[in-house]
Image: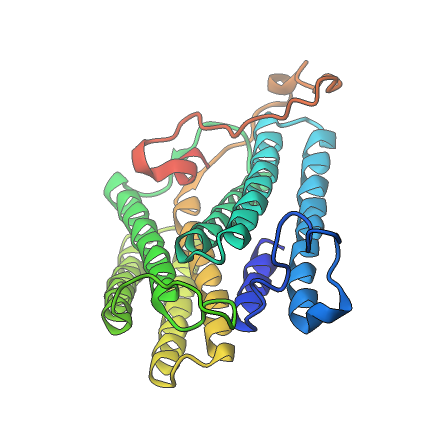
Length: 312
């Protein structure tokens, strides 16, 4: 659902439905839902808003599953609540985006917040199949640092893509919408430069992991990233020279989410977390939540810029 919400958000912009509901949180000043006079654009924008509730339901199911698991693992519950608060904050950012008339900078922040949600969701997914012991490196420290660098470059690639979007022609609405005042061809080249660096690092990661006989899962994930990056590069180049047709722009945004996931999965395969004995969980079952105060993300063990990757 974290990926789906990125794709449907792209569909809103690419169909010029970004202001289909011209205000927020209601669709109009007088109605919660779009009116017949608002046409298909109102339906598309309102439909994307409703998908937020589906996403919340998925996050809620993850939180409940984590709370009900035995033994109870606080780290998983915290990651679930982290997703919930990211979804809530991104809903507010989406509202600000509408109220500011699709300001390209808030549109960029809206997308990057969705990428943060994908990050936390992936970490929770990975942690659900691991133990709660301290992370133990499966490769040398320089190789782990190379994986962090690769994630950072892919992150810069995604950020550069939002700048290209903000300077491009798909503003999200048929009316006059301000764009980022940068030359589209130049920022596209800047974006492509990061893509070349990412491909080079991914290729290096594939060969290095093979040379040091790293775990099979890590080598497979490095190959996955290289394949997804190359496919994304082909879509990006065709999109640029074809004049950015809507279908290719949408495919490129889907590819961005998949590249981000593929990059994040590599560092997570370069360490192991052993299972703790059942006695370590004794007395840790959660007490009834009478105040409604959610857990917060567990950042214990993070190192510098590695963020949630190191936490995992």
